[in-house]
Length: 319
Image (cartoon, rainbow, N blue to C red; front, side):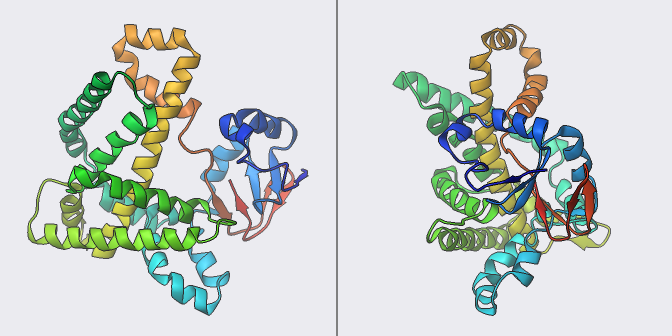
């Protein structure tokens, strides 16, 4: 193991944003369990170590409550509690059994039938976007295609008018600061919290409306989801919808961009995909693997762990 200096481990240099893979390859070869001073976290870079760690109960998904309980002053806790009340119900920040409970109930809304019912509308949205691009004669892939499609679909899934998708995009962009960190950016965390609370307030109104007027949408399905005598609370429904917005929008947009870039770099594979449309489903899975929308998964050690001879201590973060 080596200890990386702040400069060595900067993942946001223009070169590494454009192509992080040479750095990842270097870590896998020379220091697969690497401590970064800059991020105060372990970089775990080999597939087998990542695969094992993500399934090891000694690595916890809960990296919100420990910060809230132990890293903040009383004044900061009071200020950030409304935000914490939302994030604490995100299933990605929960371990079993609470993660299992939330996932089980949410899955009752994301049935194969419900997903299949979206297909005709998704086809309409894609066709409409392509028609606009054709009429203009040129386009920016992200701005004109990759961003609006998931935004429209997620908005409609929740029963939100599609013309409000730009508002949702602004909220989602701000919320990123809460999930990926806002260190060193003045005012970013405060703006992120304000956006989170605005989004939550909007969704609370939607939940109240659809509780009185059920419709064919995700919020109504979440309201009706039941397992034995258990149901999602209104707070859990709002939190789940914020997670769907953030997780579904950003990752889908990134997949469009990264996937298109990969196919342009390998024109023979692009041509093969054009010639054999039945390959689209496995191609999406491969593009997710090859250039995934997210470059890291964060966990927190809740026990001392030995990994490739390196001691990971309770409270350490890894990703």
